[in-house]
Length: 384
Ligand SMILES: Cc1ncc(COP(=O)(O)O)c(C=O)c1O
Image (cartoon, rainbow, N blue to C red):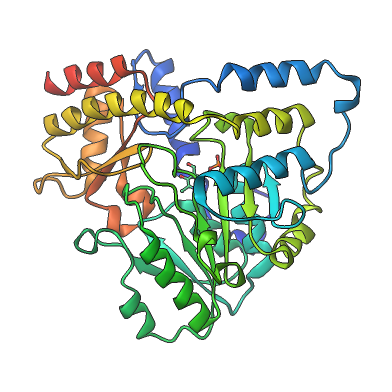
């Protein structure tokens, strides 16, 4: 390469799934019938009301221009009502909600707006890889906090507080947790808010899985005093089957959101209005929508449990979210070895937990986003 990339890319690698999907495409091109049970991209469509809203809106002449950097008022109002109704959190739609093109986008904006070299940032291990990547891009120093099965995959806050936290600026938090499937209760979130106040740390709770196989929705912003030290990301990707539409949001105190907007408004110029109107419609979905969706996922999850039984893996049957997280048997060096064996011998792709950090080295993650028949087929292949 003649022109060298910027040094800030240092440790940042291409996203794991970006490379893995290329390999799967190559295997399929060679005639191998690979089943991809790895990725959390919902296979079911949004509700017909959502699709109708989009297709009706597209026909109007006045929807094709640039949109507000803060999202249209209808979408902000719908997010505020959704948070009030399901999460018990009051948000001012004028300043406390910032629509995003998916919550992943928000991670980068928050990191760019708040972090710099010399800052430290708390990143969960295991955790969604983008927390580490966006933090690295800012030059901040990563400090991992371990999630362990013995503590129900919750952080050891006492251990964390026995260390010097004076340089820590942000803690990435994600409950219901991906990849471990752990739901956190309000008392845990309260303890996090108190911790953040004590150490003047901004908590960023990433909350896209609250509607998937999870009975009770919680927002860190429902806790008194939370808005001073916490913001929350949410998304329509998982609970409304709109991953490809790219709609999420950041909620929190108006002055924090204004800082994020200073970065974001220099990067994009708003979202297509019909998509925003359809998203507002999705947020009005009744309980029956979530129930139906979870009925499908619950059924699939039973088959995934059986698939893990066939692989001699152990799992917590009470986990929540869009995946099943399971521990591999001792005879394998790590989960990459078992995942490769399953991929190259049986043409079934399962995510090795190590991509989420070293605490995931002995775990596999299967997504619930495939048709039920594919899990049956995977089981047949593995048993054979
Ligand atoms: C924990 C977590 N956060 C954020 C995202 C990104 O979601 P979105 O589609 O809203 O960008 C994902 C997607 O898989 C995720 O697992």
